[in-house]
Length: 106
Length: 123
Image (cartoon, rainbow over all chains, first blue to last red; front, side, top):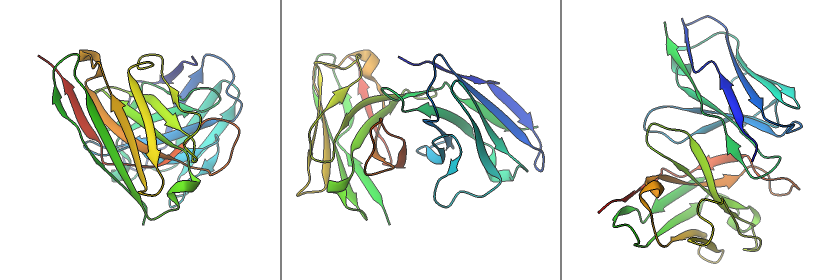
């Protein structure tokens, strides 16, 4: 099983600031990594797939980078609706998810 | 519009059974692999099972292997999860999820999710 460790566990920022979320894999997943956003009472929403590709309808303030074991999700300028929990997920082998990063309003 | 409409959750005693259903619309269901992903309330996500578009190659997480069975009926645009010998640790919100790409050699990212159905296992 590939373990994904996300950091930080909680990130406190203000609207308009830049957010940088990290995901580290226990072994290489090449570029087979996705990012999801989840708000309370909702299903996860795909933001980024295969490390750097925005999913349909995702604003360009969301970007993904990385390969191998280290990945980053960047939100260039936070909007009020971006405060949520973010998960990374690999598909190199049986899909696994990180434990999540909670992005909260400072 | 892609929709995945789930049903079938509920409260069951340990050792009991439940069947979850997920009815798909708005896309060519028979073209895409489908999965079940669960989430313990307030916790993270776990991929439980997946099945190819043509109902071949069912796959399971070790935690449910031998107890859960995934299936699909492409004529009814419906995905199923038969859960037997349920345990307290199976208590979770279960989502059905669609594979993002129709073809690929690796496992899946998930671009559409159902609304979730709660399974509670308790005596």
